[in-house]
Length: 64
Length: 251
Image (cartoon, rainbow over all chains, first blue to last red; front, side):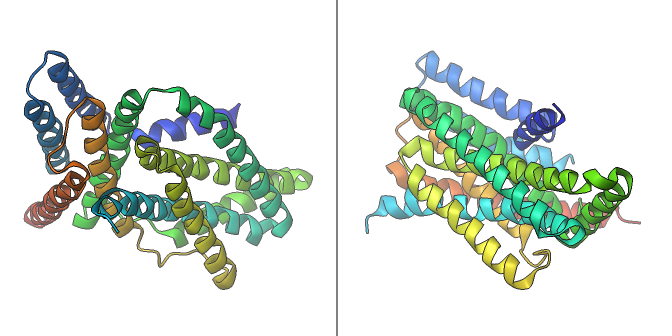
């Protein structure tokens, strides 16, 4: 049981270190999915993804 | 050799190799500590049991991956790559700037050895069993990360075999060098590897999430190189800015 718990914890830790950073990334992806869903131009969806990710990274490092 | 080899195949193999190298070095440090405290037998048995469980996991996951539609798989893998790659990149930037301490394999080895020695004193006859379990846990936990990395960089573009070769090469390299030097591989530049791999995985993450959403990236696969340049430039700027911030706040 301890091993299973450790594996689950390790798996979550693979993707989530700073909770707010992970949530921001998921938020950006959801925004891109919504943008694709409403039929926005692909440049907008792609721009949301790349600019959002670069922005999230910069913000997260600079406030650390 | 066509351009897509350099924009997708080579980065996928490289990312799988270097990311796996980081994980396998960490597992090796723990297995080595088990060898140093309790001998080769529990270390080898724990490692073999861990590898067997990982093989079962891979064999079980294969058909599941094949059943997921490609676009959905690209979005899922893309999101996981973004979470994983950007987490590594963020940490590597903060470490390079001096905000957080670098990972030290010698320290990790010493800490693990102390824990195992304490357990041996406490558990007596069960000490070998506990040591074997420690090796097993290390192999499974770090191995699961390697399996994820291989799936993440390979599944979106039918690159599972090249990515597996990259990961296998990393395991082999660590094993050979580890057996030869028989000490923690502390000279592996872990943070530089994480910095580079973080950039590659983040770039793959953006590319595959976009492809899964139906985006036709300008230049096709070559767009990945553009993302790599963008993440690299941003990361280098952030290291320099962050370092300056730290110097300015120092008394």
